[in-house]
Length: 357
Length: 231
Image (tube, rainbow over all chains, first blue to last red):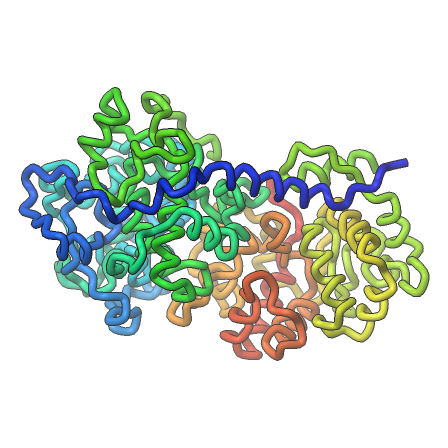
């Protein structure tokens, strides 16, 4: 009646592995630490002395182009949730109209494509990178971001307000469209962050902000080692192909780490240093801190050595876009992987609102 | 049967032409040698037997199911009933019967052994967005399930097992539709090492962070939820 092929799924897994192996062009990625740090920073007073570059890792609240700000995040060993600010308990959410808007903000934060479909172009959620609904120290918590803006950012070469910072999240991390300032979605998210920050003082150096900075790895981050780290520690949830996994109702339970449904090339997580810091502090889910710093760097390089949606700031050429926005050793954009130049996917695709509304 | 097999192939997320092992259904219904028919305890539709703590098998991932049979067979998962049964099945038989149960539809009638909570009765099919955005959960079970306890680096159950605990992919089985007895037995087994810790050792780490009372509460929570997909 039917043939016997119970192992077919193994075949699929093997096929995926073979494709993955094919991506590695051998040796081309050993030089992550070798490229001079020459990021665009026209107005940013940033030293580029080797020592400072080596120790500087950005808080991932910052996006590409921000000056290195190692002073914002203490070394991983010295930080911890114990010492950090504690946001109010969820049970303390106020009643009334303001409470309703805060709750709405929380809903958008947790279920972004469904709750803000007009501005979201992938299936990621805010909580994909800001764990515990934006509450968790060292996971770019919202209470720390709230007390850190307005701030000057070299990415925009201007002083950015908190709402403007949120616009960046939609444009880059959500591969979507910035809601207009004052849009109900931004007001709700701002209200949620404001409430989480209850009792915190305005202080861009607040402990727990961003992800704890990592020192440069002992060995230059390496694609082949990263691939191995990924297979052993990440693929179970995020898939061998990096596409993540969805529940049957469409919720992206495990976010896509690369590919068309992931964040675009303009997102902060696309920077190897940011991704390494996030991974070291927060991944694998439930087992944080189990990867070594070297493994975190390697797997961050691996993740960011795959194609993803075009940088919305695309200038018309990959090289021009790299020169203007990615001229840093922490961006793989415009660099060649397995004979293909990352980012060479043409102009950004027209925004398509999330279909999961 | 054909459509079930197609469903299986689809669930694998591949375009490979996968067909069922014909013996899977036969093992489930009739047994195989010394192995008792699975449906004797797990029900005709693989829905389980809540009162006895026998788990639902229907629509759980094939790799997950097969790992369990392999662990029963090699003795790393300790269970007096299942160990001899799994040992009586060949590796191919275990794969076949795992594929069979993975392809069965989600049980339509939740097997609720304990009194469901009021909210579960009132909202048998809660949309995922409502779950995610629901007001502060009442009770430690719902809190652990939907929020976790991050001060202990403990993620919410739903962060891997999906909204409503309805399962994600081949390796994160549904918790909804399982009985409280089964769920609490498993968490306790992970805590004591009577069950292998699972992929990446995740479940042992999780279970060891839970008190007995919390295990009981979170088991009750998922046992009260509908197994079916909300949309």
